[in-house]
Length: 303
Image (cartoon, rainbow, N blue to C red; front, side):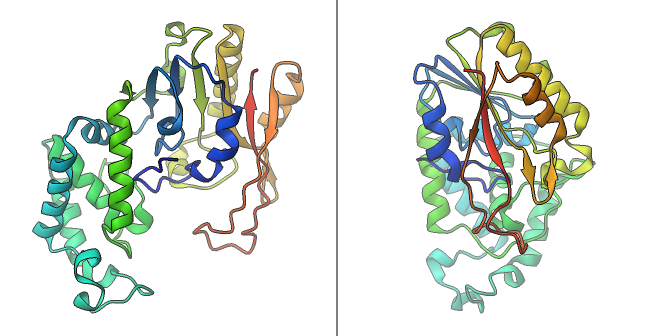
């Protein structure tokens, strides 16, 4: 399994052994409609891959990784790290920076990270360097996340880690696969995706923001009940045109339930199959007493 080089919230890497066997074996075009970190699409065999997301920064970053030579990308990454004087524990160790693995590197990198972030937010030349700089910021930011405010500024604080060997290996493996795929990137709202371009031999996978959970992509009313209903209508249209599809979601989570999804499934018992997934959140970063996972995570298919 290839893992995304981004620690994208809601990524399905841990669920892949359960999800992928439920996908069709004969896919011509695979559409990852809410691609996020691309953990699913990068591991699916198909003749063509379409990665779609509303975050244009994310998609331009993927295009940069695909189109640039790997050696050039790595050289640029290390050049940025050197330019801003950021830590590189894989080369020098924690003692060199007066830090240790438990407390992390935030104190050392903070001022350097803020300078890099400020330069990025004032950079108007959105070229390959710009998006490689974005990747380095994600690596050195809090929890390796990606977040922009309403003014289009990257606004996460510094994190505890840096560009280590594991991150480099994940990045190289990801680039190697995405370069060999017939991959295309689009930045559309799911409702604007033209399903007339698809056939019965294609497959659409949807991993939208979950209505009843909290995450960065749910901020600023990023996902609401209206969008949830629109997506379910979209799935009904796919089914009407006999285009195979699958939806990842949760029916219930930590005392909440998704009545819109539950009622839709009840009305359409004959159309859709609900596959229960077993996923423990014991290793998550969220500080909660309910880490074992009360979430009822499912994969819903129309075949």
